[in-house]
Length: 179
Image 1 (cartoon, rainbow, N blue to C red):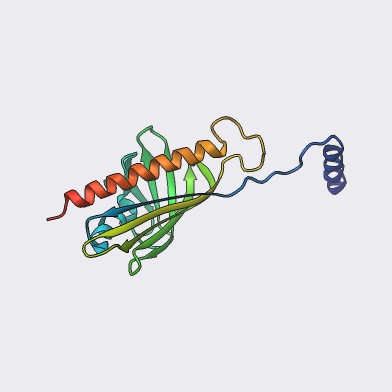
Image 2 (image 1 turned 135 degrees about the horizontal axis):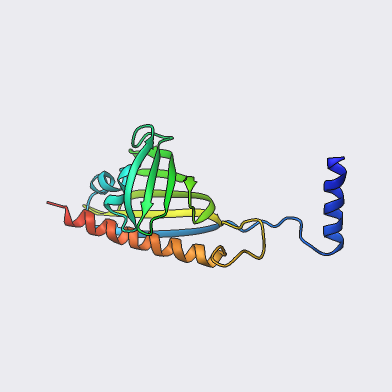
């Protein structure tokens, strides 16, 4: 009986021209910055998964809520300056390649299907290139007509702003702490 009802609803929706299902396109943002410090020096700051509040200006506090810091599967709870919070889970941590990847675990996310990667590469003697990128979909990924504030442009603008400001502050923190 339930299958028949579901099929009838789909047929009626299609008959009246309604979309039964939509799927938002996956989006990507990528930001890079060159820092006047060796990769291992930059990694000491940026590779501290729970220490994001040390260099990311929009985070008031960061606490470990599961497992050990830098351990794959650990979860950090971030309190933003606006009072909202988010939990993020570490998916990959490679100290040899100076690379980490994480995703949302709980809280008030900006987007859905969010995966972010931070990687540090050598950029010449005593220099590093830091790349921070994300792939994601808007929160209202199931509709072609998302509510205000949940459209692609809003999420892309917020992440572009956040990543740019974050990397600029990481550069400032690392370069000001060099001996």
